[in-house]
Length: 267
Length: 267
Image (cartoon, rainbow over all chains, first blue to last red):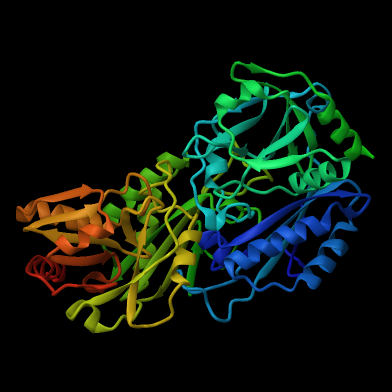
């Protein structure tokens, strides 16, 4: 795996880094095609929001340039960026002189079954709830034990993803994806004001819906409302869009709005 | 700073370690006196509970022996142990062959003002809430952004610690301490079934209370109940016990049960 830390090739970071000590940092996972990081500005926008929330001062011009140089080494790949607060002494107080660390890792593009996009996927019903924490909601920080526990709940490859609810029973997102619904020609996606990660592909889909004249609302959605949904799909920066055809006893067909968005993404 | 990784002196870990990627691990902070880690078995018991919750398989006999050898290098110090799930490929799924990493760091004992123990401390009223997540409550995992944000709320040295409430307004713990109350000769401490870290000093105090015939209950406590409390103190493995004399508009004197427990700790 090709790795840079602060622009230099190395595989190691300090054990005193606060990214390790407290998960004190953020990450982004970018799809790379022909040496280019896709949707880079959307990734940087989310990273910037995360840095604001965590009070991390980052040089975004430098990060942008570094990601572009780094990705130019690859054809089709995944580029993961981790930004940590940097090295600190023991204790939670943010060190005055902390220098953010930039870690870039290049790995091969994951091979998901082609039928996930074509015929759709079934979602596992995760029991691990997402805790309600507005201060950390939406951003892609390094505190990901909930996702680790949720992903450990199922091994069966017949489930491509798992749906997660918050501790109050609201549908929030999937373990590594966001989720969208279509009802009466309108797009719905869970509000992520309380928890969940606001994916870059989710932001892209919301942009496209606006351009296509499809109404899209962020709202609270309970499992009992699933019976009213005409289409369901998940989204993620790496795989794009997967239609959802099953969750618990609910069944859906692949719908026309899902196909339209998939087509637009391929274009 | 003296550091071992898996028993070998080094300052570096892999950037692919899941402790960095997801905060996928646990830690313990032990006080070292004359080369001995204090309350080692209580620390190991909490670590074991954490490993069970996170499905991390650790050789505890090896960890115990390693901590003892490591601490023998110091007189008065702090020993921090981090256990991570180990190196993994990208993605939340727990790798089948993950080998837990053991990181030991020795640092100098923190110098808190002596009057904290003698005359008591004031607590800052943190606005950062603790999210309710029973699956992660009590254990000392590496997802600590809530504590980082809470500790960043105040700089004034007149506040030695900050009190944290959960998202439902229950008093839970302090940023790096637990909290106890005395009411009508009985000890009360917040239930940590929903969030918070169950400190080793907290466990020690509950043991001592039992031996002293002092009733101790874990229960839900709201800020409005503070007016009923006769004594308040915080606890932490490194500093022991600090009487609390102020929080918002509440004032307390240092009480006799607090002094008895402090005395017992010094003995």
